[in-house]
Image (cartoon, rainbow, N blue to C red):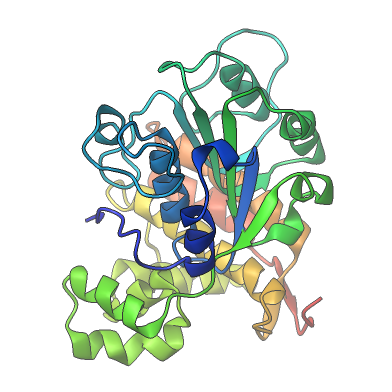
Length: 329
């Protein structure tokens, strides 16, 4: 169950920065970077809600929670605000023809440019969140480069990434970069207890979770046959180039399973760039291509295609992408 975001937890530096800022002082774009599972997307969504809030005056951070605009945000990931646009994952370049834009996972760089060129529905600011942003090709990144340089007036760009090195330097240089560090021990305990886990069980996984709520939740799912554990073994086998001995894909588990695989892939790629020196690292170029293939699999999963076939497509995309014995760059 998704909790309503608690703005007092996590992202200390970013929270302090925006708490000192007024809406009139906000730059055109920000890049939030840090390990996976530390709340970057949640923080960015709350920041967007604050910037669009009608009841907080000129404060950049701190939504009133009761105005018409805040009511449209609802719970995490459930926003229906027409001036808040969110895309998660890889972006393709898109077609040049056509004046419309996509409203599904097929949204492209050119869709976003067309959509944000329109006027705000409320007559004020518009906010674009590119969460866990990856560009499927240099062309997709370059399509947005000029937009990042000179966005339309009243548009605020928010990007989050666990692997900022994978984003073009020309894009990073046009954004104000803020780091979101791992969650503290007390913050992790509060969040895990809020989700119904016993304090003793939560404390048991804290050191291994290394400040990542996503990793802590996975560790708490300790049943050998539980979905997260099964997917973890399947992922590790495929990345190592072996044929997985377990199967996880059913019609009921497909959506959550694909999201879990993307999270594990992101963690594996980020580990090399965040100083964790795993026994093997993921080849960056092949890893980014695998993200695109998983995005394709997610779209395919919405059709009547067999879940086993979808899982096989993902397996082929990630098989053997680890670099054995490679050192962190």
